[in-house]
Length: 403
Image (cartoon, rainbow, N blue to C red; front, side):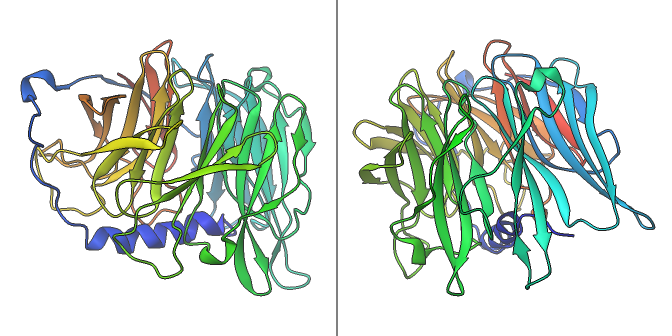
């Protein structure tokens, strides 16, 4: 089936990186284990209505609704796609907003984000085979998600051949950024779009200044600081790949895409996750080639990196940090760890840090999707209720948790 090429290539990249991952030091010096608890609890599990794999999802950080899309491949018969809403508290499917059955997966919906004021953004992937394999996507909108219906359709400029990589889920303002891949003279290029969820207004595609350095195996993460209306884009900046290279972060005007400044990050490798607390202008990232979690003051680009502790070692790769979510009410960052170093039983963990990089608590018992899945771990929280969601335990599930 046709899935996001960017996600598929990323899965392959992560697999190769994880196989040779080095073991981090044991508990970092200065960590008082008496102050770190196995906190939080696991709650209800969301199950997709038709039992298909969940390819995209998000939750309203200020409300009670969630959004997911699923695809079910049947052994004999049509491909089933579903767009569904769910209740954050109970985990129950609220409504099947749209169900479609097709002979193939040439058209597939993928929920990219809930952004702005409860605006659901769903990438509807179209694949044409008339002149080779060409993507020609549009976006279904749910404004708001809580109404449980598709309210409109949106198409960026220069969309032919575009493969969306990421849409920011900034829910503190209308400003968003989308990163995309597209082909130019036989090479994979990177473009940026600004998007205003209130006006449904896309900016023109901005070609990335170092676009020849990228391929579909290198997803471009981004986040928006709602207070300063700045977007941060993370990438590797050299033509020759080095596992010891730190990420480069470009800061742009989130309305126009104008480049404002650049700083060099901490840690090694591509950003593996990124989130911003707009109340403090603090950003937290993880990186692929080490077990660092990085904390930055966006105004200066200065910050610190801390190592994810190894309380237990389960012998697996990919023990580095992955997805990151921000809690701007309690000023916390939550980090997904695919293969846990906090449990002798293995599985996955959500690690909670304060914005100074202090480890507050960890929550065990998760089972994020396997490393060969085209779906990378995602984590989202509702700060008011201190509830969150993450992928798993199965392909058709989302796991609720408290922290």
